[in-house]
Length: 243
Image 1 (tube, rainbow, N blue to C red):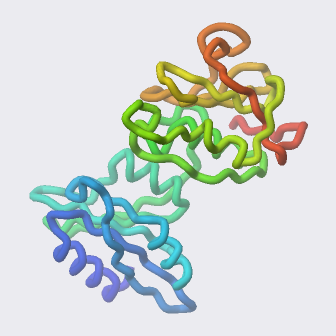
Image 2: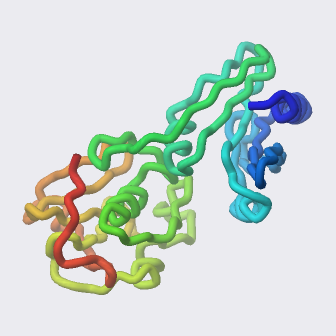
């Protein structure tokens, strides 16, 4: 990180404190620059959010090589939280964290997260996140409609699986390896989904639990299945996805 960019990050963090600042380091040709971005999170003293429009605008300016945010507050240090690490992995970009109180800067790099055993973080590593990542191992890219609030509760109007499965290119079918089964678990909405494995079990990521493989042919999740679908671009012969 060159001195000019570090000076810009430091100034932005001090200006925004006690809110978390956020921004991008952009590479355009040989030139690197820091672009400050508004923090749109509802609780900006504890978290940050970069709206998609700002991300797209930054990509129009060059290649995003770092996502930056600050950890303000007395005694705060640039130690990444679990959510920082998960979001860094999701972005595929290096994350830089600056703590103005101690004037320290640290970076974390994305790594490959196994499909089995990942921690649950709503809006990041959740059941749709697992569905997306599994399909990516098969060469199928899905859109990200995750949100970081419990959309399946009655006070929210969202009905994400019901509204999006067909739009995403899935076709209804009988359960078979590679199918996505959508379930209704302790909710009035279709709120959970998983993948039928080659052995006929269920790969899924239940709220508050690590992602795992559980029996499916009968029992709890089979009884709560509302529909079985398969993506139109998914090959019949699945690619090996277990490490």
